[in-house]
Length: 202
Image (cartoon, rainbow, N blue to C red; front, side, top):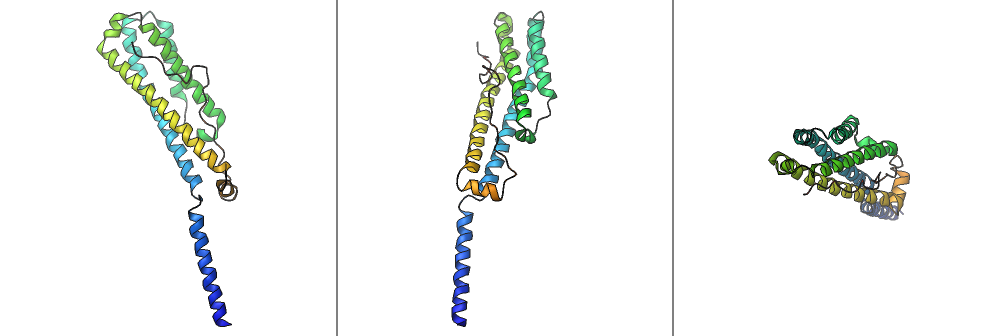
């Protein structure tokens, strides 16, 4: 009887060990891993938007030197940039759909204002030939491309995270271990042309 009991204990230990190994391989850590990916890709979106905002003052100053009477267009860019700069945004915005929408709307307004500024620039051949402007134009174009890539990566990581917590076995782990982690909203265009980068090539 004693031998049988020892055998049962060993058997149960092996079964428990196998179950633990199986659990570690069936996605118990996927949800926090994907959540961290969402935060990292969002940080990259913010980083690229900040890079664009940092370019705006020099761009406006350069255009102003050649087209100072285009006050309305220049003012729209300055105001849109100021609105973006006044928003305090961090990873917590991911849990606040209204704040995320406000942030996206402000960025869309800046994109729109920059697009109008680039249309104005068409009327000033001397400005289009200015080396400082050409360098800023190139940096802005590159930044707009990086913004598009960062948003795409963010959308993909949110999709992966949301799919994990809504499908088996992630749904089980979410209900038992990670119920405080919500389904996340993804990036959505706030205006018809918000997804479209400003045209900065001539």
